Image (tube, rainbow, N blue to C red; front, side):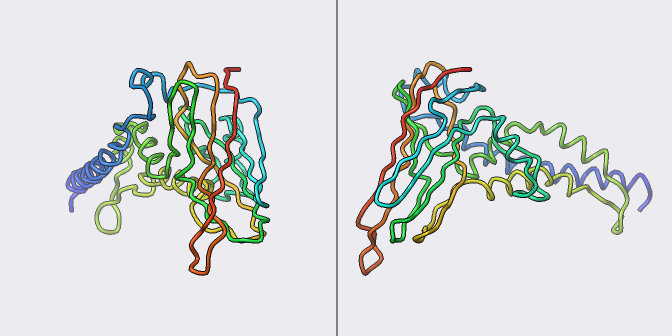
Length: 252
């Protein structure tokens, strides 16, 4: 290929990649079209704003049947420092994958019950005193949130500026294209609390996130629910444990 043909081919290929990713982003971002809370529709506009909340107490712990569960508010400064820790996250450290519109908790579970415990964070719920109910943000939802905040024009410009001749006549900086999203995805997978069995003696912790509650809320109730245990011979759990935590909500 001649020089100008290489450039034109690079630009066409880059734009094709952008269009493909744009379609993917649009599909994922459709998750964000849902209401942020189950509650009064008049409250919806006050939910999910960029707010720095203070929770009192910051951390709480409960024990039932040999299962100890603690819930600790994890504000943005805490998260920024936490994700900079290279001893934990290695080469992926440095990016906080959560946003200021989210309310994040660090949850720690210690199973000393002598029995297997089944954990399902998708069943956890946050309630405020404005009659709103919030669901836990799963990884796909948080990825869609990140994509909705990433300006497509910046990504496009970066690709076109760096397109250059390569082994097959053109080189496109795919590494740059997927670098940050891949880092965010990895950090989320490494840090969020996941569904699964916890055997006796296991201590497991991770992060969970919700939309920031209503701007006029003053109290929160975090329900860490659905811990299943006491399995019968067919491995069917017979008991469910619930851990409710009450917080007073204010702005520092």
